[in-house]
Length: 171
Image (cartoon, rainbow, N blue to C red; front, side):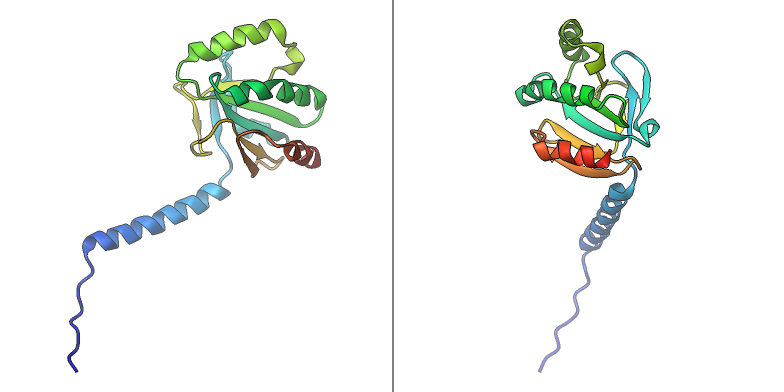
């Protein structure tokens, strides 16, 4: 019986294997790393999600061009007002291409929505903006962060009714 010669493993395969292992390690670290959302609010104030440690936070990525996102705003505002005085905060990150779109929307909102129903808003296009939550994908995309600063749930699309129950449980 003739022995088969051992073929050397192509360098491309070795590099690919190392890249895959590095990606898996990075993904694992990203899941355990505390969430980062930083930038300036649309009012120009510096903001860091880490400053809200000790509160339950719902971070929602949205766009003024997203009908589902706009449709959810009254529900978000009512829940926000309902939990006033509790350790709860909502942070909305606009993914609009132009800041002007968000500013125009906010002009309308400022005339119709009471101050007690307004929450932190950031624009992802702002020069100092950064996050480590990954691409939001379908909008709205929401992340629920517990009081310790850990992401405990991700919601894609409409926020389900159970999300509000989960928030109440975490409070």
